[in-house]
Length: 185
Image: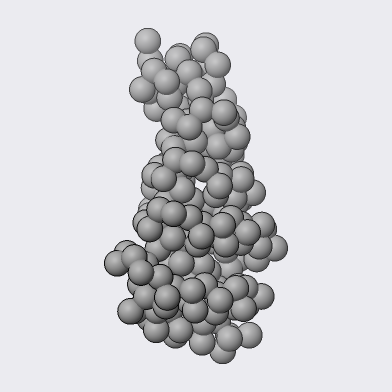
């Protein structure tokens, strides 16, 4: 069974991903049936559907594809609301991919990016040192001027953190990021 047949006959993106198949229909049939630009629209709708699924495996697969699109230079900003919903995921791999996405698009969609800040604040207090370190890196990389006080507090707390992964000795490396955000205002 071809991937497009699997996609069309057995429930869309979820069935195709669970079967290990590519979830997009073939390019020639899509272009002929729906026009030139609808394939990208349909692909993004499938990614949104996957991100809103209850299955972690589908969310992870969607985020891998989204980061792949970003790496290829494609615009994935329209997926921002669906991606932000997954910032509080328990899956560390999924969380890292969401962080990559947020660093890329937070400046463009500042209002929606603010929804994720409370999650970063909780992550800065997490017992897992890797989560604290990655939350600090992402928080200091987000170029949203309104979160500068939160960044400063996070840097101050990182300076007293005893974990080798949380950059207490290197907390000064985040200060230029704060300065750059303030200068851009």
